[in-house]
Image 1 (cartoon, rainbow, N blue to C red):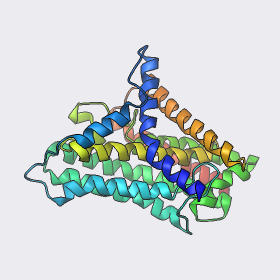
Image 2 (image 1 turned 90 degrees about the horizontal axis):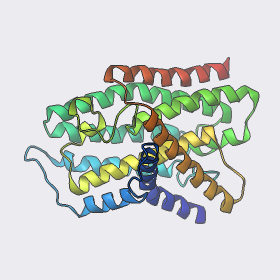
Image 3 (image 1 turned 180 degrees about the vertical axis):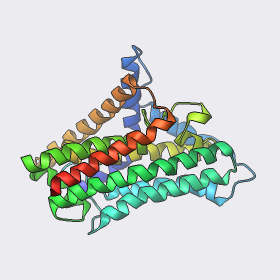
Image 4 (image 1 turned 90 degrees about the vertical axis):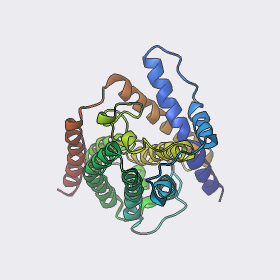
Length: 302
């Protein structure tokens, strides 16, 4: 019960802090002080207090999109085990629901964007779903590797397996899918080099082009859902790349927090040393992620 409460607390409270770590890391690389680590919390609170501007062309879909996107990502977070602990929601085959909860969030986000009738938002929606066609297969190939190693189709035992099944036979596949999952995480959370969340050039935006008409509380929900998605997918990557399970809860939780904050710092480093790719090169990067995860599966079953 205590572990479940901590899981929910981490899931609800930590995500915006990761954005603060990324921003602080980028500022450090640029030789600046940068915004406070808690600035994302202040931004969300400010957005939730602001008024809401709605176009006369929009329907209930526009208002429901951010709410459903946040709800589905929260549910996916409850299915993701954190550190060495079990997830609050677990059942056989839950990995399928986990993957398509993100698909459902994307569906309603794109529907909300199309509901405005804006050409720019339609363009961003088309790019979003096109790139998803490449990132989702990579995610499923990674799940196939983990399912083969663990012998189960439930996320909790499947993601705990790398911590107990490390050997020469599985090391190479785990490294390959780690690279693929890192690229998928950057794509799904709209980070550089796939997308720049701070850009204002409509012709080069992907996710940000989809939310141009959202404001106030609705934009606050979108911003929070994006940080939550980074936490969930980052946790998935950590289970493969740096699994932690000492059996001591008082030690496992701090270790997990240190790892997820370190991962956010790595994302900040990547964004500091790389530029955003040209739009026509993004599919090549995602195909590379698919090949990494696919070859990891082939290497495991050879």
